[in-house]
Figure (cartoon, rainbow, N blue to C red):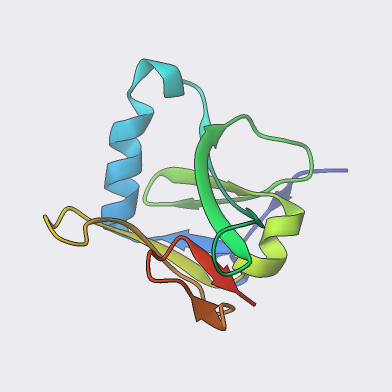
Length: 117
């Protein structure tokens, strides 16, 4: 299977500029060298599905997008749940960190790390 390269209009997950800046800073750490951001979902969490973000190697069937100079990988299973999702970052003292806005989530838990479709 060949790698799918997504266009701006057919993107699974997008990053805001502030999220891209934070991810770029984390990519400079030695353990992340040469890796790409992967955003995924898996079963679990208090609402049935949970989000995950990790620096990983590219796989043959991944969807790949790029925003503000940061590449993002999404596997085909996760793409079904993440289409249209936006990842943002805030460095606020209260409620800061990565925020995932998923239009496919019918319900999210209070922590924002899990959702129900």
